[in-house]
Image 1: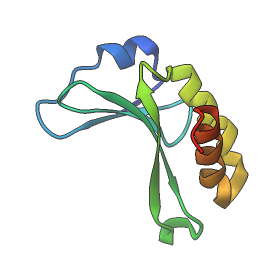
Image 2: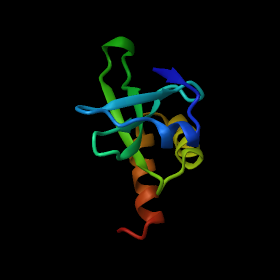
Image 3: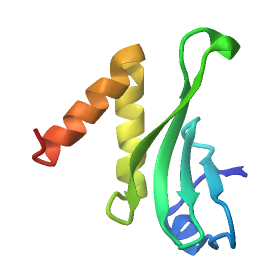
Image 4: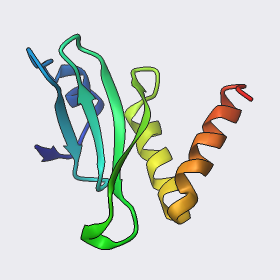
Length: 102
């Protein structure tokens, strides 16, 4: 399902009884929130490596809601995606630095 995600939509989306539910965002291609049966909600970004359709699908965990807000997760995705093939490494390094990890 694709729609523009809102904080209300993320908070009110029902948890599945089994498996997972992905709510995809219309505002940012590849951005979604994953909802697990226990009710946890995590923001993810899916992208494809170089090679077009032959490229591999990859997913990056952005953060867990409500610790990371929808606006912050969207912002992180928009800011770091343009870095190209190395953006993932850059994003993870910056996130670790901002949380005081070495």
